[in-house]
Image 1 (spheres, helix red, strand yellow):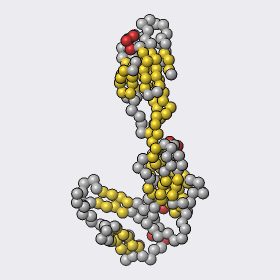
Image 2 (tube, rainbow, N blue to C red; image 1 turned 135 degrees about the vertical axis):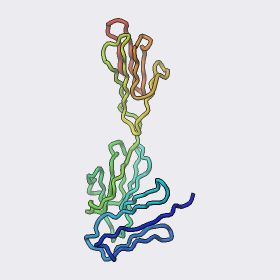
Image 3 (cartoon, one colour; image 1 turned 90 degrees about the vertical axis):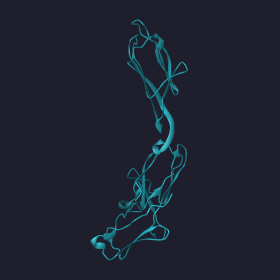
Image 4 (cartoon, helix red, strand yellow; image 1 turned 45 degrees about the vertical axis):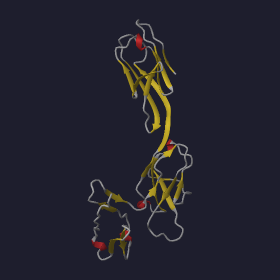
Amino acid sequence: MGTAEVDYSYREKKKERGRVQFFQNKEGMFFLRLSNVTHEDEGMYCLRILTDVEKQRFLGFPGFYSIPAEIMEGESPVLFCKTTCDLSGKTNFTWYKNGKRLSERIVSEQLLLPSVSSDDTGNYSCAVRDQKHLSSPAVTLSVRYPPQSVSVSISPSGVIVEGDSVTLSCSSDSNPPGDFTWFKGGQYAGSGRIYSVSNISSDHSGEYKSSQTSALITVENTSADPDIHMD
């Protein structure tokens, strides 16, 4: 597969006139050189790449940080704050989660999250100390974890007699969201979070299971209360 041809330009502001150079080297890296900088030049500079290939359009931000592709519950990922700026001496960094600053004791360009759980899911960003207005774009850390807090509910509750319509609903907390499969008496009954039975009869009586939770339904052909158990 060949490399797409790339054209580049820079939208020079009036105050930058005569102070900006924008060029590409032989390795294909792009550079923006701004001379005689002042406080007015402070801000975020972005690089947008538009190629002649459909859907190959990119927007690059400075000061980004990297996150491993997949994080499983219990793992201890390390987030890295990166910058192409020349920083003099030892530089302290500030980390944010969902826009709120993390511990003041965290000043490294690396952020260790020991034994992560679902509580660590969120939007993380970083910045050079005391430069929150120049922080990196927020990137989401998503922690994967197995189903927990699994439960089954029956609607309607109370007496179930022949001819009724019954709905079983299974819910759980997991990432990614789980796929639900229903079994009756060990046999496959259906899939999806909700399992419905219309015009129910005594043939539908039995134990219905979804994941590790079950519901026992007994259908009566009289007005007597049925036995309904939630385990």
